[in-house]
Image (tube, rainbow, N blue to C red; front, top):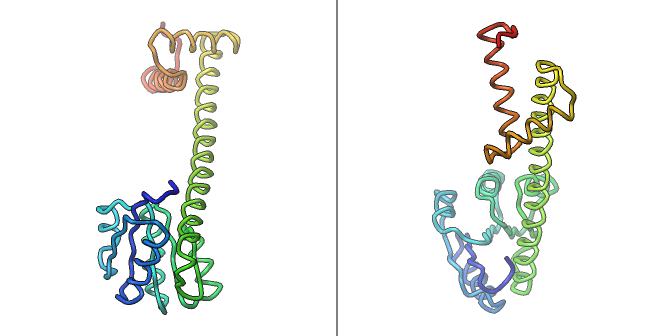
Length: 204
């Protein structure tokens, strides 16, 4: 995602500070930027603009303003860099928990803009990769449990070995051009329905 073609959204209610930030972005080679000078309906407006990166510049934010920005960060799922003139440990911790990719204290300085944008993008991509890998691992584990359950049901009902149950499921999946997990779900559903209708009795 790194590069001068990034579409950057600047959120800054102060025209002077916004101008400094816009100039710094141009000097850093970022020529695609849009500035919002109001904090109203931020979530909807950000989603409509579809920026690659969001920069939020807050001079002396109070707790409510910070929390409002943290809510935006949780919702939009974009790299977010936040500049503040002052902060405390609690605010920094809440910024991290809200998914702010780069939280810069001690004001906005032009020479910081490019490295902060790059840091925000890099951190966001790293975190997104970790979340994606975690979700994939959870999905794989859940699917494995479903397949094992279906295999166990077949072994019990048909009085066959684990290898035979797996082979039967795999063959069915290949014949129907479906995933093994989908076949396992169908088997479990069929057995559960059978138990509901016939009390699990062998009727066939």
